Image 1: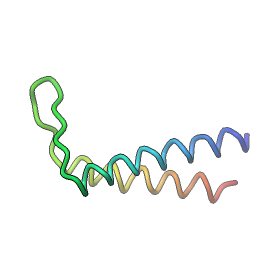
Image 2: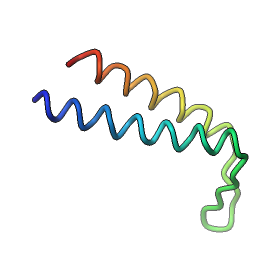
Image 3: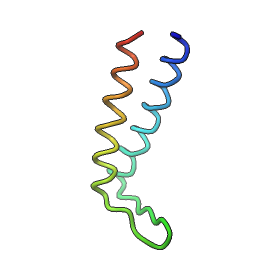
Image 4: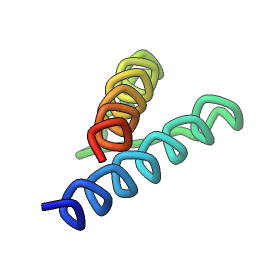
Length: 59
């Protein structure tokens, strides 16, 4: 179970870092011809960061 938690925490941390890069660099994401609002990355960054911290504290 510890390996699963460590892997999950690592994946969440990587996703959080990707959202942080999008926020800092202002990357535009287009899905099906629609631009994804930057607010989505702010919410996703906070959420994935909290999940990563939770996973690493659970170890």
